[in-house]
Length: 173
Length: 449
Image (cartoon, rainbow over all chains, first blue to last red; front, top):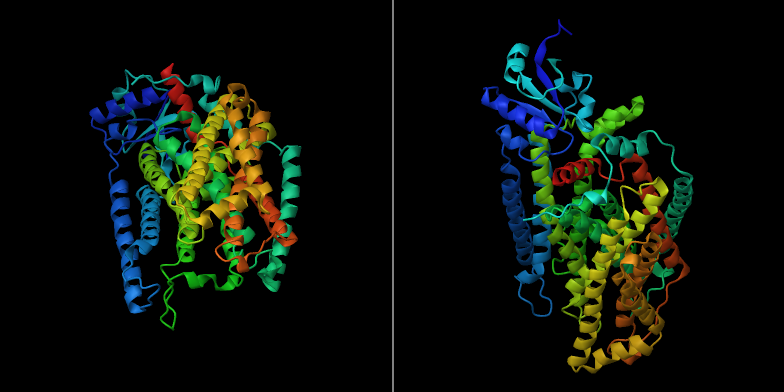
């Protein structure tokens, strides 16, 4: 492992609270591009790492509204393009157009939320250096990991000296 | 706000043990005998459905008991029934997520899976009922050479959009919830094939905090959209009836009434599946009696809403002063379909009152029985709405009765088989309790203590 190029440093921590504390300390010490791994979404962890998710709800709403407007326009256009009077109702009988307008808008916002999540997370991604660590499987059971890309082992050890850490080791690229 | 600790719901579990336990159900353990029995029987029934559909498609819908005036008949009864079951699945999962109810962790996956497969069954019927199912794409605004558009004012077109939106939504929501669990299975799998299989499904998910942050936001957006979707899909289906001028169909209370009925039958089905699955896979400490208690309460709540809707329907019919409406009710109570009406009242109004008792709600056997009778009751309700309203409308010269034929029953039994078959395959491929939600729940209850 020593000859392989190094991606960064991986620190294993015993609990969600320790992970949160260590992330805070590492951020404070000036490490950037940190990533933390936990078996469930730990509250405030992403914020500690300086990340805030705003795009997904906004984009879902905007694209949902655009799609709904498009669906309404399609029906309105079709009603005039192919005029067909039933029971003396006006061509622009808009209440009848609402169910489809609503469904199309909702479908667009749902798909936007799902796809934005996948794209922003860079999924599908078959390879990532963290998978090289032999213990990383624990991230999906009871393991809490902090990864510091590009950091040096000694620096990280010095920074997390006062913290309740488990293993600290280099992560191969 | 003081949080009530919910730790007692799932005692003595750690992150590791719950992960190993649920993943082990799929990866290590051989399927229980009861699973094999259910699998073989349901596979046979699903195969029978294929054969029956082949006969129906080659012969025509004349095989069914539908006639004029009862043009809709059995297929529509079953669509509405299946869709109702699907809805509660979505709503349980979504609303309990938004309201941060932690007890959802044990049952949300079951509810989502149930919704997914129920919608497949529901979507089959309108296609069969078209008579010429190979023309179903006429409902889409596709670019055809004759420059024709679908008729946007037609409830059939609304249905098509509603059901297909719902199908896409349900599968997206289910996949999103499965994604971290597929990663868990990938990490635990020993066999090469399973590693590849779950590796591909997991898309490289690696439990990163940034992944989780976006995941949670996407999940919240989808859950927030779920409630309007559920209300709109059943609402639109009920509009198919309510926009007609036929007495018995033309009620403004229909959309909320159908939604409540959908939730009632859906909660019953989740309770039914929860009891069956915890017995089949030995999950008594993951899906506890307290979970059954909560499900029982939900069943009772929605049953009472449905009962209120019955009374409103009767009140409206008599308050309107319209003799045709009176007639529908006299006919429902004393006519050829009277046994259906009274059985419905017995199941949905009388029997459910047992759920007021805590001992009943906490007993798996009692919940199982009540879930079955509630589903039968809801099916009878759909039956009496569709049949009794159309078989005797304005003109006595057009009155007739319709009864389901053997083919009607075979299709219905076939979809029941298909539903169980898909569910049985699902529980062997994907975790039937959401692993990551369970871990979060354990984390939360440890913090409360």
